[in-house]
Amino acid sequence: MRLSEFDFDLPEELIATRPARPRSSARMLVATPGSITDSTAIALPEFLRPGDRLVLNDTKVLPARLTGLRHRPSKDGAGQAKIEVTLLSPCGDTNGDWTALLKPLRKIRDGERIIFDDGFSAEMIGRDGEGQARLRFAATPDFDTALARVGAMPLPPYIASRRPSDAQDHKDYQTIWARHKGSVAAPTASLHFDDALMAALNAREIGFTHVTLHVGAGTFLPVKTDDVSEHKMHSEWGEITEAAAAEMNATHAAGGRLIPVGTTALRLMESAAQSDRRIAPWTGPTDIFIRPGHVFNGADGLMTNFHLPKSTLVMLVSALMGQARIREIYAHAIAEKYRFFSYGDASLLLPNG
Image (cartoon, rainbow, N blue to C red; front, side):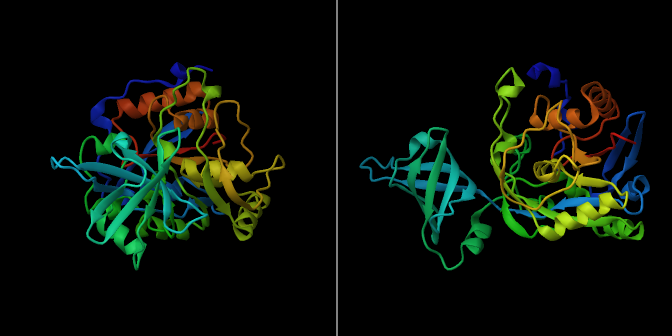
């Protein structure tokens, strides 16, 4: 299976840089094997059945993008250098240590310090061979407060290249049910939900189950292998509690459908799903790579945004709906000028109608 099979032409003007307001006013394409319907997110309950269950990722995005100055003794005054930092994950073995992406990594040596503001700094204590660094943050009374003060939301590159992150993104790039800190990217299909949509879903007797998958920076990395089977997914930590697994299994037993909101929730469900369609509790990392040929044991559909050409997420939706069908769906979305990517419009994909 070649990477070129998942390529398509996308006009730049269809890349959204701000979300729809209100959130549930975003457009939503609904696709079954035999139909494509143009609708809106607020109409989601009309396409679900009482007893269906939405699976929601309750991860919380960190303001993980930092800009600081490296200080190095220098006679000519050239000892300062601007360093951009994207935090990836805390190191579980040491308090205050984080893995991070640094740009430019070549401009800082082990043992040097990056100053973010008067009360917040980090020491460079190591690096690996894949461009990641390890930073040790100076003890602060409240790390989260300091991070909120100086950090920016880590917008995807296709937005960040068009405008800088700002204060509005602290609200826009977070779901209304976010509660477990740990992501450097939002589960963006969930950004279409607001109080009005939740009320309509409750009235329709739709169930909700929360799971957690902390989205890593690997979600933005391109596929570099022409043979897609050679691509290695970055591992991400997730959890499905016993209570969450029981809710999902009860829904299937009663004849309801499980529809994850976002590819992150789907990937976690499929990591935990058994061949008999039961979903087991899960705590730990997953690097599952869903591409055509995958047998779905947990999800009966998917609500998701429109994804980048040649990305693993286009491969995932192609696995769910079929490659030819996804080409038709995306061609329709482009012709109808749906907005793409993280702040863009939604799709509801129902492979069995």
